[in-house]
Image (cartoon, rainbow, N blue to C red; front, side):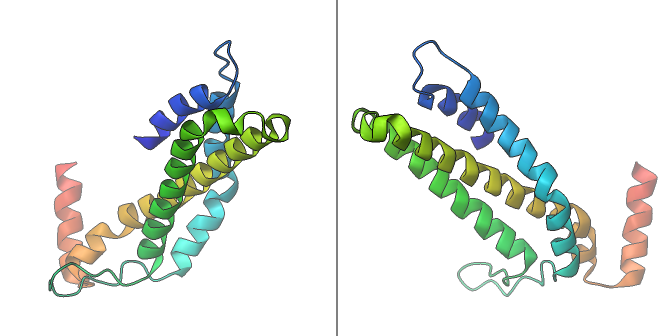
Amino acid sequence: MWWFAGGIFMKDLSGVSNDSLLLTGGFTLALSGFVVLFGSHVGRWVDKSPRLKGLERMLLTICIYISAAGTALVTQNLLLVICVTLVGLTFYFWEDILPVWHGWLLISIQTAIVLTAAFSQVASVALQIILQKDWIIILCGGDLNKLASRNKTLTNQA
């Protein structure tokens, strides 16, 4: 949802009065480009890391051990919060930001927004890889017989 909204905000944050989509295009290109550049590295990291190690007993909350899934989830959400905060602060202080450094402060903020969103997208890809690869294994608890049975059931239904 944020990736769609981020593109709309980029149009408003461009600072150009003629509704230029240059910053929106750069935002989308950066998101896709970062996934292309860093996707294979993230995939290798996911393969080498212990995935979701397990769920603790439910006391007040469900605890997820810090592993590849926990790291990807925390990184994605933290970067997203930073990105949204930067967008909100930029809109709030818009009139004060424009004249600073002859407009270079606005360009710096726009760059920071695009970079945090792009790295958040890469963390999102890591989380998708983890969940898509391992969900059936975690449901089976590592039991190979149960895994074979579930795999057969899923294959027959497809």
